[in-house]
Amino acid sequence: MWRRAGSGSLRLHFGAAAGHCLRRRPLLPLPTIPSSSSSAAAAFSPSSHGHRIFAGSVPGPVERGRERKYDITENSLERKYKDWQKKLHPDLVHTKSEKERGFAAEQSALVIDAYRTLSRPLSRALYLLKLEGIQVDEEKTINDPELLMEMMEIREAVSDTTDSKTLEKIQSQIKRKLETWSDSFLEAFHKRDFNHAVEATQRMRYYERAVEETVKKL
Image 1 (cartoon, rainbow, N blue to C red):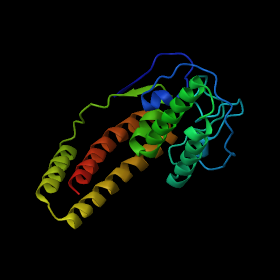
Image 2 (cartoon, one colour):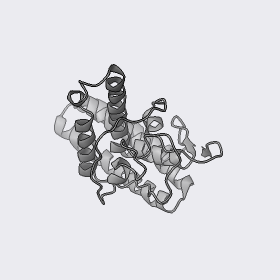
Image 3 (tube, helix red, strand yellow):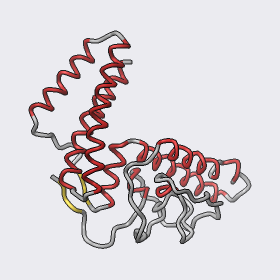
């Protein structure tokens, strides 16, 4: 169902989560964000070693004792994201050299990608598994006739419905299913039951795509 990545010390790099591989370069002397006890702060707050973007955005070994959390609050996540966007705003570096401005732009893009990764339950779950060295086949089809039949019925219902209220009701039902499997991932991940955690992400993908279908129709 899944495979572990190559051996060696894991490296925490938000560029990998967002699909970017930035070259190692010294960070600009940016101001730090005050620490917070919220779970989102574990992803956004600067480390004690001077890392000033998302924890792990600078290539390096995973810090011991840093808890990897799946259940983060949306408000805390968005607040941290906005804080970093303010600190990386072009107006703050417009008097700097071209190299520094370019680097700040790269870091701003990295913050955006990291926020997108963390803000969606599925992409956040896949990233946490990646940190554990587990690569999930995102195109793997689940051999579950009941689930596949449910997906067909959802697609037909969405396709046949023109009333927005009915579509919203269908979307709400799908989101509840997605949330149920999100909770299943959380429980499995906490237990380090990676087989069930991977299975949860595979089912989450079906429901996430179903939600996307309703969004297109609304």
